[in-house]
Amino acid sequence: MERLWDLESLAKLRRRLGLTQRELARLSGVSQSLISKIERGRVNPSYEVVKRILDALELVRSRGSMGLSAGAICTRDVISVYAYDPIRKAIELMRRHGISQLPVLSGGRVVGSISEATIARRFEEIKSLETRVGEIMDEAFPTIPEDSSIDLVRRLLQEYPAVLLQKNGRITGIVTKADLFKVFDSSPLQI
Image 1 (cartoon, helix red, strand yellow):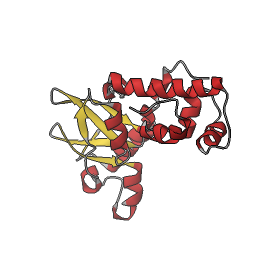
Image 2 (cartoon, rainbow, N blue to C red):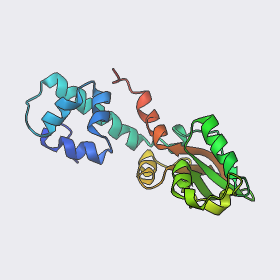
Image 3 (cartoon, one colour):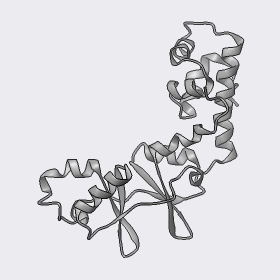
Image 4 (tube, helix red, strand yellow):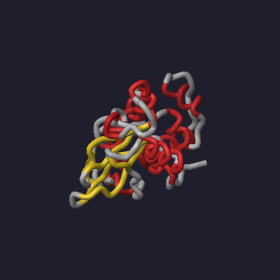
């Protein structure tokens, strides 16, 4: 098992836990520039600074081992459109709710997704705002059990704009990159 107090492996451990220097700075109350200098071996930090950084890393590590689930950070109110809906409706829903992507349904099942990026990328193909969502939609977001780990969600969000959660065959929530920040919201290490 890797020792947390080994400063030479700080960057490696931080990356393994899926944290950026900025996120670690926020959690530990230490400046990002100081973390960068420590990781590059350019500064010898005080005991207090080291303790704050290691406490933050341990908190993130323990959250992972405690099994914080995707369901704990998801948005429960999943806003969606149907494949037969006009693109106009998808755009209106995204604007009204301040979101950038939607799952697409057909017959009560998730069959695709549509996003601002999809609409921008396929702009030339859209004949009018009455064009059906199903004509330009992308593949469906991945769907995983709501008790899946945050780490699995984080890895999926590196490839997809959203992840859908399910329980008993029913969609119960959606997680986007913005939802990942909820992991840090309850941290006692915030400044």
